Length: 92
Image (cartoon, rainbow, N blue to C red; front, side, top):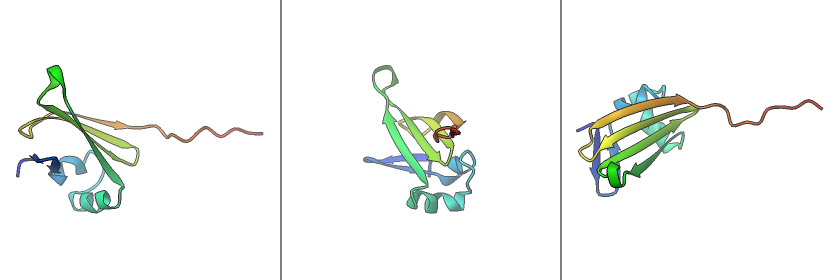
Protein backbone atom coordinates (compact mmCIF):
# COMPACT_ATOMS: atom_id res chain seq x y z
CA UNK A 1 0.00 0.00 0.00
CA UNK A 2 1.16 3.50 -0.76
CA UNK A 3 1.39 5.64 2.35
CA UNK A 4 -1.81 7.46 1.35
CA UNK A 5 -4.44 6.05 -1.00
CA UNK A 6 -7.69 7.53 -2.31
CA UNK A 7 -10.79 5.36 -2.76
CA UNK A 8 -13.75 7.39 -4.05
CA UNK A 9 -14.32 9.82 -1.17
CA UNK A 10 -12.36 7.79 1.40
CA UNK A 11 -8.76 8.21 2.45
CA UNK A 12 -6.46 5.41 3.67
CA UNK A 13 -3.30 6.42 5.52
CA UNK A 14 -0.44 4.20 6.67
CA UNK A 15 -0.43 4.46 10.48
CA UNK A 16 3.37 4.70 10.55
CA UNK A 17 3.12 7.98 8.67
CA UNK A 18 1.15 9.74 11.40
CA UNK A 19 2.01 7.84 14.58
CA UNK A 20 5.37 9.44 15.37
CA UNK A 21 4.40 13.06 14.74
CA UNK A 22 1.26 12.60 16.88
CA UNK A 23 3.23 10.86 19.65
CA UNK A 24 1.37 7.59 19.23
CA UNK A 25 2.40 4.14 18.02
CA UNK A 26 1.21 2.56 14.77
CA UNK A 27 -0.68 -0.02 16.86
CA UNK A 28 -2.64 2.66 18.77
CA UNK A 29 -3.54 4.91 15.83
CA UNK A 30 -6.69 3.04 14.73
CA UNK A 31 -8.10 2.66 18.28
CA UNK A 32 -7.45 6.37 18.89
CA UNK A 33 -9.27 7.26 15.66
CA UNK A 34 -12.20 5.03 16.57
CA UNK A 35 -12.36 6.67 20.01
CA UNK A 36 -12.35 10.13 18.43
CA UNK A 37 -9.03 11.06 20.04
CA UNK A 38 -7.31 11.40 16.66
CA UNK A 39 -9.33 13.41 14.18
CA UNK A 40 -8.71 14.02 10.49
CA UNK A 41 -9.76 16.66 7.98
CA UNK A 42 -8.98 16.75 4.26
CA UNK A 43 -9.05 19.82 2.01
CA UNK A 44 -8.84 19.70 -1.78
CA UNK A 45 -6.68 22.31 -3.51
CA UNK A 46 -8.21 24.67 -6.04
CA UNK A 47 -6.79 26.67 -8.95
CA UNK A 48 -2.97 26.67 -8.66
CA UNK A 49 -3.23 23.97 -5.96
CA UNK A 50 -5.49 21.68 -8.02
CA UNK A 51 -4.39 18.06 -7.67
CA UNK A 52 -3.07 18.63 -4.16
CA UNK A 53 -4.66 17.96 -0.81
CA UNK A 54 -4.00 19.13 2.73
CA UNK A 55 -4.72 16.41 5.26
CA UNK A 56 -4.77 17.52 8.91
CA UNK A 57 -4.63 15.17 11.90
CA UNK A 58 -5.09 16.27 15.50
CA UNK A 59 -4.28 14.38 18.66
CA UNK A 60 -4.29 16.22 21.94
CA UNK A 61 -2.34 19.44 21.48
CA UNK A 62 -0.52 18.17 18.38
CA UNK A 63 -1.50 18.97 14.80
CA UNK A 64 0.05 17.21 11.81
CA UNK A 65 -0.56 18.62 8.34
CA UNK A 66 0.43 16.74 5.21
CA UNK A 67 0.51 18.20 1.72
CA UNK A 68 -0.28 15.32 -0.63
CA UNK A 69 -0.58 14.96 -4.40
CA UNK A 70 -3.34 12.98 -6.12
CA UNK A 71 -1.04 9.92 -6.37
CA UNK A 72 -0.70 9.80 -2.56
CA UNK A 73 2.84 11.16 -2.40
CA UNK A 74 3.58 13.36 0.60
CA UNK A 75 4.99 16.64 -0.70
CA UNK A 76 5.40 18.34 2.66
CA UNK A 77 4.70 17.96 6.37
CA UNK A 78 4.37 20.22 9.38
CA UNK A 79 3.85 19.42 13.05
CA UNK A 80 2.66 22.05 15.51
CA UNK A 81 2.03 21.84 19.24
CA UNK A 82 -0.99 24.03 19.88
CA UNK A 83 -1.40 26.18 22.96
CA UNK A 84 -4.13 25.40 25.44
CA UNK A 85 -7.49 26.96 24.63
CA UNK A 86 -8.43 27.26 28.29
CA UNK A 87 -8.92 30.83 29.45
CA UNK A 88 -6.42 32.16 31.94
CA UNK A 89 -7.51 31.98 35.57
CA UNK A 90 -8.20 35.25 37.29
CA UNK A 91 -8.07 35.94 41.00
CA UNK A 92 -10.95 37.69 42.69
